[in-house]
Image (cartoon, rainbow, N blue to C red; front, top):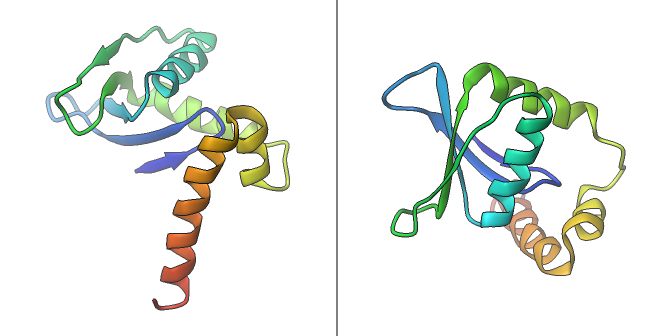
Length: 113
């Protein structure tokens, strides 16, 4: 699962050692810290592991139930009518531009390009 939120960009997969955990990977330390903070707010304390030689630079091992609660909370926190504008407000122009690039690529998919 790829997930774009106002907290950051996350790639979530089942942990290969224990399916009761989700391995969440991030491209930035800030995205990992944002997720760690959100999880701490629901009493889930996870460590951020730096993995500079892997395809994603940071990883968090999250109990599957806590990941589901994070997703539910993210949905309930939607208070905007335009995601790109909210990302710009919360994370700034650079991140907003990156997300717009993704949006544009998926626009091409929609139009068969």
